[in-house]
Image (cartoon, rainbow, N blue to C red):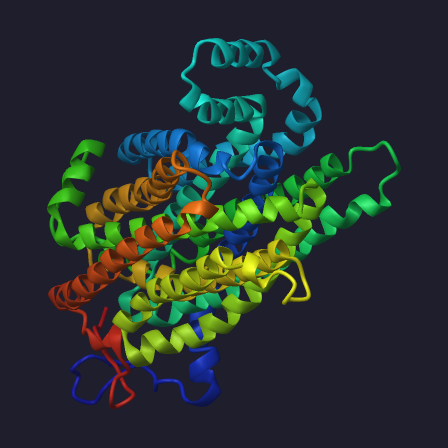
Length: 528
């Protein structure tokens, strides 16, 4: 970067051309900042994929897919609110680095303990007497119409350490990826860098899905080498939790290195650029929610997060009910999920390459609207197949359940790949023009509680639907809810697109910096 002859400011280097523009739009001096962030995202996603697949294996094989909506509504949602309360309180008294370490520590400790101490001693943790009392109460005193729901609660109580594993795994996606990683990224990334960096974070960070998928396959298939009488699933859990522990340690070490070597480099990070223009007072959690309710801008982001959470949850639970029928064994179930994660990783890498160019060439709006459209179309195809799968029996070379599993997996892969490649980057870019208080408190409430409310909202809908029969028998109703949710989601994207452009202009950023390529190939930047 050098000053022009007129002294009007600095001129950025020429825009990248050819394949470099598509695959690697990063300047060499930016690698010190870019690559460690990629490593952090890799570790966050590596851990999350292992946690996500393992939590589903534990709960679905032990209590059935029907337990998932119950657990999300009565377990994950209250814990999410509790975590936000803790986070909001701690953010007022701790400096950012201490807050980061404080939030990540409980995850590291629990998952390290689960594989090596909690699971091997499940008999000690099993509440046998409580379960017996609950079963007696349901059989003798509870209304008949509540029996199925209450017995599902009992199934969850029997394996409450699995339930805690499930809840913390869900929170890792919110507190870890959405809050800790993306908040740090938003803190240190300039708007002019975001359109290049954020897609790159996903493009390289999502190699974690491939790596974690291969790790899950190896650890789950290891039962063929385990002597008879040895708990193969317990051995697999030890290996998986050891991998998660290593991932957490790498995140902490990388974050520490970034604070010492990147945030002290004025060429890569300028504190003045990140400071709010006006002094803001600290907000309580209640004030944070009031901020969300009063801000149309943040309200649109909330609707995006809620839309994804509700829609994907409605479709996913139906798919996992088919998956449990096909794979009743824990190792077989987890092996399939490993292949699922690996293929999702490859699909994400492909779509992120396209997505980075979609955002740069076609704009933020097209990037943000692709995910809801993808979920609606693929969800309708999956539900349509489930509704008519019996008519296809004998026509297709495989069983209807197996084909339903494959069709559902394809739907999930495409939905998650577009989420990682387009939804996440565009959502995070929308936070950048906001003041620091809105970024910290508003983002915490949106990503943690909003994300959980999305999944819990889907769970509440499924719970009501289950009162009138099985999910399969009520698929048209579930699909109707998916359509309504996606319509609201798309509407919020259009509204946010206009407000985002206006916010960038207010912040002194050119909308073309994010929405399109500069026509002359050269960007004017401030002297700072």
